[in-house]
Each structure stands twice: as structure tokens, then as C-alpha cells.
Image 1: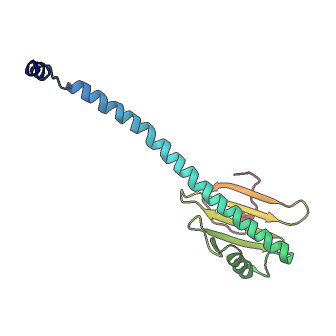
Image 2: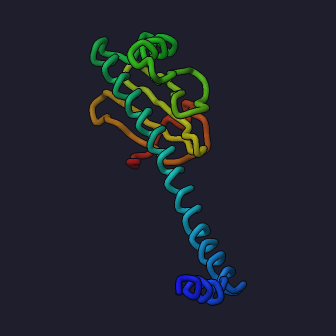
Image 3: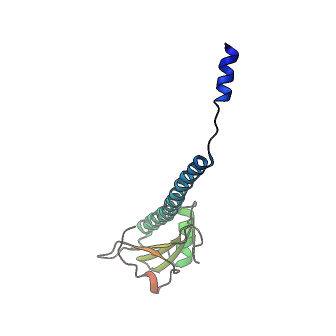
Length: 159
């Protein structure tokens, strides 16, 4: 009786047809086609947010320097050195930013400083802090230019 049951199961075995296998492969391909662009979009937004967060931290360090001395450093190099000492996890520098940890700093005068950072996705983000009457923090959205005195007039748009 046991042998008869095994023989029936063996005789009744049937594999998948080629059409059934192709339908399964097609469904998997569609799911992958939907998932990959979604993942890449999330990754790019996360890279941009990381760069923006670093930029905000560096502006906060600059504001602490201003609060201590009533000016943004004695000169450009002095401000960069003060920022390196105040926020050692970020690399304040005079030149263009190449990564989210490298913040380009431009000291406009005693009361105004501009900073810019490049995210890993390739976008540049800038901030300007002004400590005069009517001043404040100004932001710029994604751009592809380096920070110069001409581009320090950053528009007011939050990121």
C-alpha cells in the first residue's frame, strides 16, 4: 500500500511550464524596475541632507565664534582656523568644497560670513549668516557653482 502511494505521487509529479517560469521572471523584473529608481532617489536625498546638516553645524560654530569676539575672526584665515578648532569633525577651508565634510568658508566682513558645501550627489548648498540689523541666515538650494564674493548674495529659500 505504501509503495502504491509513492508510485502515485511519482507518476503525478508535474513540473512548471516554460510560460509559468517566464511569468514569474517578468514579475520579478517589474518589481526590480520599480525598486531601483526609488532606492536611488532616497540615497540622493540622504546625501543632500547630510551635506546640509554639516553646513548648519559649521554656521552654528561660526555664530559661536562671533558671539565670543563680536566678529567672524580677525581675517579669512583666522576664521578658517577658528572653525577648525571649534568643529574638528568638519574641514573648514578656503578653497572649493569637494565633499560633505569640506565646508568652503568666505568671510565677507566682520559681520557676514558665507559657506558652501558639495553633497555626494553633486549639489552645492550655501548659507550666509549676517549679524547686522535685519540680518539673519539665508540659504541657497542646489547649484553647481563655487562660492565667490559675487555668489554670496544667497537667496532666502530653506532647504
